[in-house]
Amino acid sequence: MPLAAFPKCYLDDLMSGEMAIDKWLDVADRIDLDGVEFYWGITPDLDELDRIRSELEARDLSAPMMCYSPDFTRPVSEDRQAEINEEKRAIRATARLGGSYCRVLSGQRRPQVDRDMGLDWVAECIEELLPFAADHSVTLILENHYKDDYWDFPEFAQDMEVFLDLLDRIPEHPNFGVNFDPSNAIIADDDPIELLDAIKDRVVTMHASDRYLEGGTIEDLRAMEDEGSQGYADILKHGVTGEGMIDYDAVFERLAEVDFDGWISIEDGYDASVGEKHLDQSAQFLREKMATYNVG
Image (cartoon, rainbow, N blue to C red; front, top):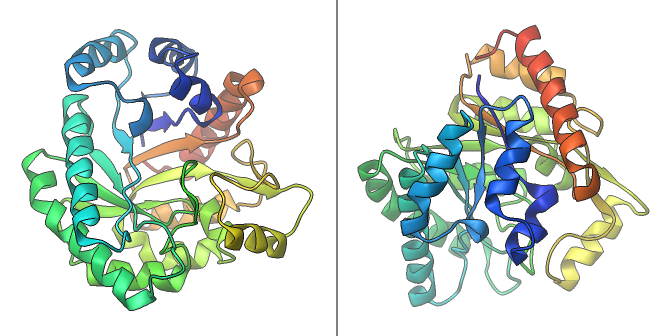
């Protein structure tokens, strides 16, 4: 099973340009990783991607996954079409980097968008994208997501019941699967193992994240979400994988049951000052689990 990492702790610096992508690749090269997951907000123009791919190859790394955040619950149809077009750009970039997986989401949980209407919109958008993804040898991965760092509202299909309903509306396709994130299920007040049991046959990639709450409760988090503000609430923390609320033994048991051999991408904390140290700890923890359960 190949292991990648997402640069969450460096994301603000990468977005602002304070940290160059090459510096992030240097960090990844010093950790026991096989690849790095890209975030669309830091992905350069197409003419720069060949250079980035060469830099990756020089470090014996790949860029298997693109973390993209389409917003398919925008009420105006022309706006949803614009989101589809932007996702196509992300698919092209994924392929240009040599990657195989590009994330799709449902969109923001806007108060004025009801469940059935939103699910119809999202399913239509994803189905429209599937032939384009297939043409570029890219698999679209639907994540049980919480909230993009730069969104005002949480994920429309955050709740397990809604997520499963959306998944049922999209027929099985060789270029479509699930990116499972166990800690996002915790934040949705769902049981991540129950969710994994329901979707494990369609999981093709996983975000290895761990969460904890500091200075508040799930109820406090819900109240903050309802107010609608950009980014994550201060009480919600990403931690080192294996040190939070997730039972990773139970997760890997389920992955072993379905002979999972896809990419796992580390997604841990926000503190850049200990970013490399924590990523290394997360990588060591996951390599141990991969060996213990003979997955990959």
